[in-house]
Image 1 (cartoon, rainbow, N blue to C red):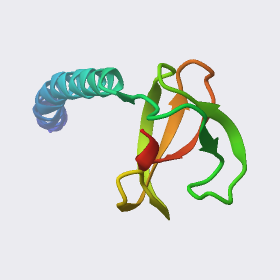
Image 2: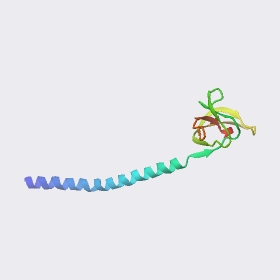
Image 3: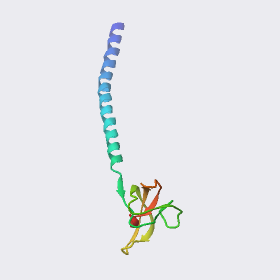
Image 4: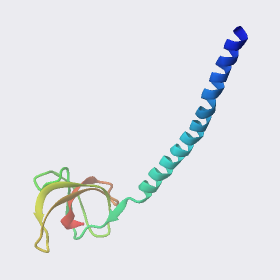
Length: 118
């Protein structure tokens, strides 16, 4: 009787271990894929430039927000995300409420800039 119980338990353990070892290999593959995708995303950061000299980089997406600094053509801006904000009249006469959270690559200042100025 003890031998039968021991063999049954051993069989159950082996039956459970075989799929887990396959799962471990699959998890390793999944983790590697996620790591590679994150690295690729990091390399694809959008970069733009400021449309004119003295573009204010603000603390929030609106003209009443404090200016943290400014950007000018040639500084380059890493775009972190797009957010809705105060509507601004662009130089071409259109109204635009899209703002970008950016980092000025020359000064490392991070803040918000209207899409009109990138």
